[in-house]
Length: 500
Image (cartoon, rainbow, N blue to C red; front, side):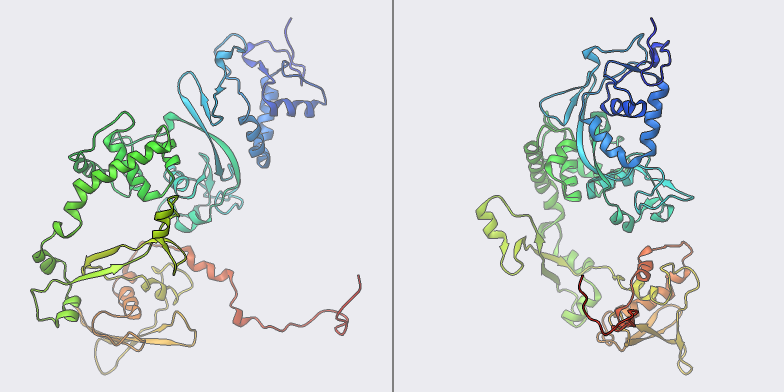
């Protein structure tokens, strides 16, 4: 006698369409829909099961809760090629003592409780607004970066607005804007993780994401480290040990998460791997690239001493004096479990644990233009400086090639500085600014740097670089433009209190 579907009563002629009501959410959905009492032994047809899947996809607000119920239960693994419904115990995913580990016949699956974004295809996972035209999928590179840096899982196939992308990758503002929508259990198989053993397993961008080194630089670095006393073990290769150490420095994630990513037994093993890699790097790399031993005095004088430093320290005359900079900075650390080390590293002035290394460096540096773009953007209502920008330049009628650029102060609306530049077609002859540091002869202030940067470089660029940070100023109102007094609309202004 042919069985019938318990909700709709259709005959279940083909065994491939038979589905038992084993799923708790499906068993809860069908009685509510049919107003019948149904047991887990009854069967359901493919059409009714698809109606449940459609309802679940259309009500994304319940998806996280339903997934939570289903992931905590033992799931039956249906075999579509079998002649009947499989109920054998060999087809089940069985849990072991650790509830986060699921074992199958082929591989192990780790179940992690993760902060996750919304998986809806109708809303942007960044701003959570309804998606319009030109919606794009989040790339795997961005998904990995946000998972490692923000501890937020983005399901595969999730979309976002195209305005959040710069060069097909999420902008820094978009990365900071992403917030978790729910807590979900994500099953991650051992086949999902790739390591550094095969140089071709990761592409160049993934190497930069995990270690801050390109693939070629990583291979060269491992070649240098391999000459030390470090040896491969049963837990890791030399490449994996160096990769784990660089991931720890680059991402700052916990040893427990590193053990999960690289399929290592426990966090204590990861700690030993990091210690072995650190000792090998100190012996084989640090001595030849850092410290007084890797550079001669003649190299410091001839190749690593700037003209400005020689003018300041030696008057520009001496060519045989080595000039170095000794600088100390704070490195904040977590509180140690060791009481003695905690007392040594606790700073009474900063009220937290820190280290203060003393760095000895040469005077070689790069001319920094951190504030140049900010001053130029203030002259226009957008951060796109490749268009027509209202950049005011005053030209002297008496002295040729002498210009003056008024620049708004970054700290006061009432103060405007005037940067003066004298130049030729080949070089800049001189500069002066009426700001506090603008009259110096070595180097220049940020107002001069902004004018030189925009007039000689930025205005000739053709590739647009839109930065959304300039649009945020429209979201706030300047408090000086808001009056503290307002007209009351109450009928009786004299009544201050009422009894309720």
